[in-house]
Image 1 (spheres, one colour):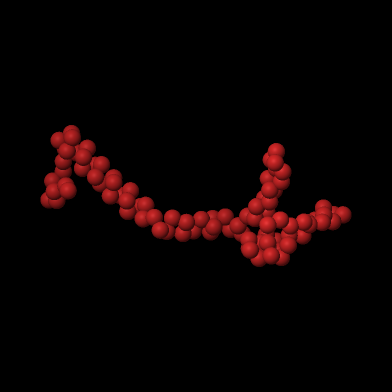
Image 2 (tube, rainbow, N blue to C red):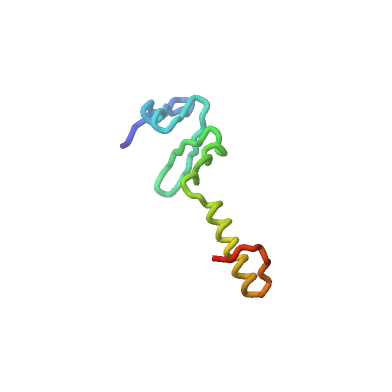
Length: 92
């Protein structure tokens, strides 16, 4: 969808209400202008960039997978070098 906006004598552009609502652009919010060969792009910036990443990997239990992989790696290395520690648990 495309929109046309008029630039004021002060260089101001009004972002259409529909777009402000859709992208969560509020008064005092910031947008990023990026210039390229194909034209100008405007991207709304999150109010708090740190909070915008919160929960981004929630559905990926990455930490658990990394810890398990590291345990397996340590066990393989200990078996290879003959330094397997006696933990009372046999490797799987």
